[in-house]
Length: 57
Image 1 (cartoon, one colour):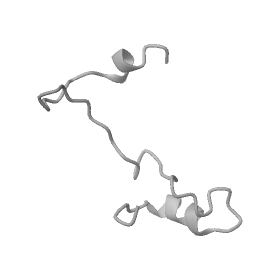
Image 2: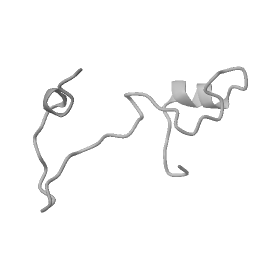
Image 3: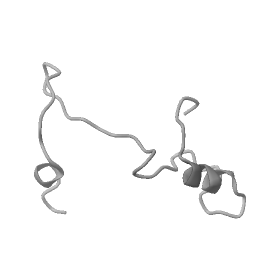
Image 4: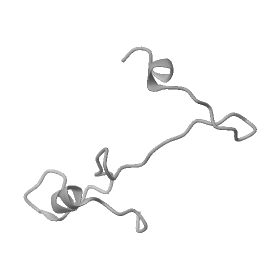
């Protein structure tokens, strides 16, 4: 987590003892959160959208 940089709004939440997300090490948003990619066994990127990965959504 030391290398992870939160955006300013998430950092404010993380540093505010009155906020429910205070010191929540998993706190992030669409702006600063992680992104995931899906690869096959040969490490080739698979072009699959969320509608195919999560059809129930």
